[in-house]
Every structure is written in structure tokens, then in C-alpha cells.
Length: 275
Image (cartoon, rainbow, N blue to C red; front, side, top):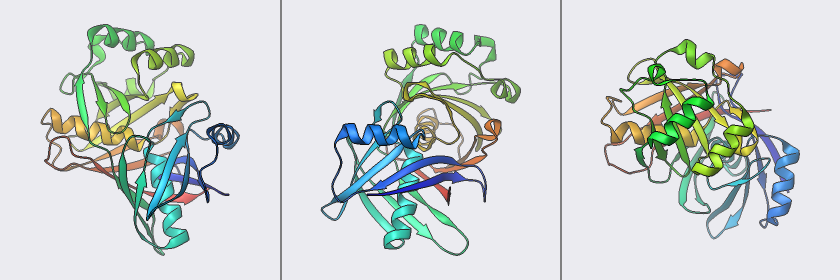
């Protein structure tokens, strides 16, 4: 069993979101994977074992298993490119099949993936009010050009668009209350965003259900956001860049390509570095 520690969606030689990557000959027992993920201590660890011509992949946070994790998939793709060679790798997840493309050169190392299919729906008023109360916000703090929503791209993310970069910087919440709300509402993360422009977004992603106050880079949430922007006909011009982790001192950059086909997966890419 080979354990790698990789920072995904890094910004040059700094930042990014740490992920564990464990390559195995056979998939371990879930209890073992959960224990290892807790020991590694990152927001997610990807476990991968050979399956047919591809890989079976499962993702564990320190406290729970999740069906899909974007930054751990980027880390996995980069590790496979380093171990096997640059190229595309088929991944069988709990509820989807996707492909990751790993690349490696003297100048850049990383990966890209196309997310599972996307969908979104408006946020129910009661859930909106609970979420606003959790983060100490009110309706006047929202940018309703991108209305509150629940968006899916392999995992379910609550999207809340803030109308001020300063308010996004000041984000705070009670982690235990956030975990309880996430569990009741079936959420993976809360995705609080500020649109600097039609194509550049600043994001903060609390992940309380996984025992993590905030993620510095969340590829699945970037994919969910891209799918949602397509659903509401936002002028995304085919691609967006998400700045995440800056307020944590871990600057991360996520690039998402948005095709015109409604519901299709979003291509998310980023660089990596070894921790």
C-alpha cells in the first residue's frame, strides 16, 4: 500500500488542498480506509485499486465516506501520471464512472477530470433562512443575480452568492451546527461565492459534515457551480476560474470548462505539488 500526500489545485509552489492518495492492489475494508483517512488527517483521501482496465476509487474524509471528491481526484490523476505515465484513466466511483487525465512535465504537474452529470434546483425558503442564520447573514447580503440553490455534480452543494468580497472574507459559523444542518439537508459542502466578474469567482467552502471547518479547494463544488451557472444562463463564456483558499493562506486555483450541453459533466483542472 503506497500513501502519497498531494496538494491539489495549487497556485504555483504554494497553496492548494492537501489530499491523501492510497494506491492498493485490492481495496481495503471500509473500516481500514476510514481509520487511515483519519490518521492522514486531510479533508479527503482517495483509495484506488485496479479494476479491469481502470481503477476502483473510494473517498474518505476523517469522519465519513463521500461519493466523489474533486481535489482528491486531481491528486489521484497526478499520482497515476507520475507512476504510470501521462494519460487518461477510467475511474469507477460509488455512483458514477468518470475519467481523469493526468499530466506531468518539467513545467507543470496535475490533472483534469470531467465530473458526473450536473443538476440544480432552487433553495427552499426554510433551508435558506437556516443557512443565512448559520453564517450570520441576511437576505440583503445576497447577490440575487445568482440565486441561492442546491447544485449536484457527484455531490450536493448549497450555493450562496454574497454581494461583497469583504463579507465573504468575514465568513464564520458554528461547525457542529453546520454539520447537523448538512446531515439533515443531505449536503456535502456549503459553497459561498463572490463573483468578481462573469468568469472569475472567489469561493469559501465549509465542509462540516466531514469534520473540516473549511476546504481550501473543492473541485466537486467548482463543477457544481459550473453546472448551475449553465442552468441559469449566466454569461460564463465557456469557462470560469475559481479562487479559493486565499482567506486561509492557502491560495488555490480551479479552472472549470462549461459546455453548452445541459446536464453534462464539467471539466475541472488544476496543478498539483507534493507535500
